Structure formats: C-alpha cells, structure tokens
Image (cartoon, rainbow, N blue to C red):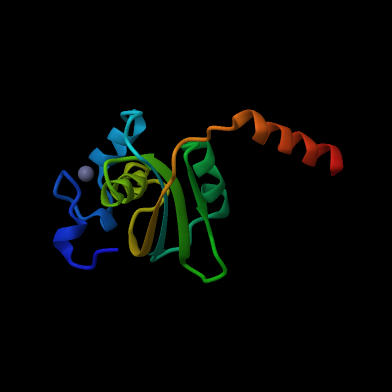
Length: 138
Ligand SMILES: [Zn+2]
C-alpha cells in the first residue's frame, strides 16, 4: 500500500484512511463493471463501542461488519465495495463510519487492506452442490 499522503487521496481529494462520504455514497449503487474489493480497516477509538452498537452495524449495512479483536479499543471494519482502485474502495468502506457517526464519533485508522476479488463466481451451481454436501455431512 502507498505511504505518502498524495497517493492516499481519493477522487474527491479526501485521505482514504479518514474515509470519504462521497466514495461511500458512490459505492452504494456502483457501476457493476467496476472491480470488486474486499476491504479491511483496523481503527482505534477513544471510547469503547458498546457491543450492541457493533451488532447493529449488520442491520445498518449488510455489506459491512464491525468486529472487536482481542485488543481493547481496537476494532476491525470489514466491507466490500466496487471501485476503480484500492484507495477509493478503502475511502468508501471507511466512509461508512463517517456516514454512521452514531456508531463511532472519533476514530483513527491504523491499518488497511484492500484485496481485489478475481472474476465473479463462474461455477455457482457447483458451489451450491458443495454447500449441500456439507450440510448433509454435518
Ligand atoms: Zn472520495
């Protein structure tokens, strides 16, 4: 990942690590031709996020999950977005936090990861077979 501020700028001129509401809003109804990204962002907060709020995130946005790894005041936001590049994808996923200020008022992103997903699943039927086999076996 890039380390200088300029290379972190999203198309709206925001630092992707601080999130961008415009990128988030664009990711709500993206161009289906854009690449698909899995994004993970670790961030710290000044105050603990209540467990109930963490669980509520799943209701607010199905594309997002907020988890608390073992370290206190460190949280992991995961989500997926269609975007032209990794910086924009990260800006959009972190933008979810800006868009939901009731969840996290202040946060500092410490680490991000954006993984491009390869071509969409081409063998959906086959995957369903595997899934059914798993269920039968368990
Ligand atoms: Zn942006």
